[in-house]
Amino acid sequence: MEPIVTVKNVGRTFGKGNKEIQILKGIDLSIEQHSLTALRGRSGSGKTTLLNLLGGLDKPTTGEIFFKGNPIHTFSDKESTEFRRNNIGIIFQSFGLVPLMTVEENIEFGLRIAGVARNEWNDRIADSIDLVGLTKRAKHRQYELSGGEQQRVAIARAIAPTPRFILADEPTAELDSAMSFHIIKVFQELTTSKNMTIMMTTHDPEILEILENVYLLEDGKIEKAKHEQDTIK
Image: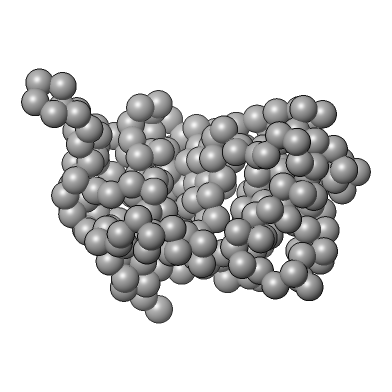
């Protein structure tokens, strides 16, 4: 089975001249289908930048990115939007919820954008809310939810359309340990039951310790973590 994503010698530079900053330097990476992969690294190391590139939200300065063989680094803005709509679920650090919508309405909004058939909405909304443990909060709006609950809504909205590839930027940052492990278990189950592929960033050493696929991003370069001790130091 071919990798769902292949990254070849990707670099990303911001600014020009004396203000030029090279965030990513010759990244090579393959992400296997139906896997859960974690990306670790210090704040400012380029983790979010890499996720944005993989999701077609940004383009590399150099190098190539292929999604199931398709060169997404060459896509126009319109093609990138369509690519995300059909293939990608994104969990942002800022959650990105619509403030005046309820939990159910935020998830419905995501299904609408993804083009999911209307007759599937009710089941998908209920199932995704149940997976993140928010059934009793389904009618609440963003301002009525804690930071952790808002994060779980963002997760539910991303998984409800069952995209091929989910990009999750610190998806457990606002959660306690018990809920963090629950969400990771949900992610693991989705890779098998729904054939999803998930790539997430995290600083949580306890989560990193239980995951098999962990990459370290440091000084603009990426490498596979060698073993658990390497992962958690």
